[in-house]
Length: 137
Image 1 (tube, rainbow, N blue to C red):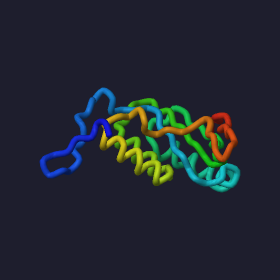
Image 2: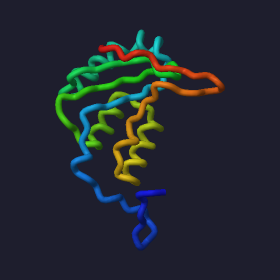
Image 3: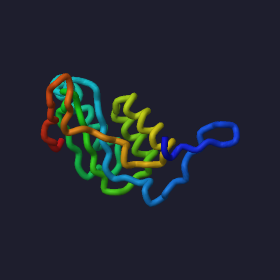
Image 4: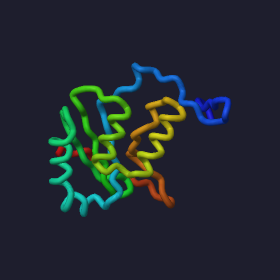
């Protein structure tokens, strides 16, 4: 794999970081719960968590994912470090496997480009499924 180096003991060494690339102001969260059910039971709680628990939220959006679950997108009025963005994602109950994979990917490669992805379209079992429109909440 590219970007992976090992020290003299064979342990993975983290890559050199590019400080100008380590901050973000857009955070995405993927919650593996059916959208309609989640919207009825968790939207008010999530709204409180977003606007009272995350500093500097300029705008927050939700949508139904292409798999029928929940996507959240936060636009912040300031930059946060990539690690702060991981903490915010965990605080908002991002899919644990997605979060773990992104942490691992960032640790091994130092690349932000492939973290926090959500898909607009998926091809599953012979069907093309499209995510819903982003709605401000």
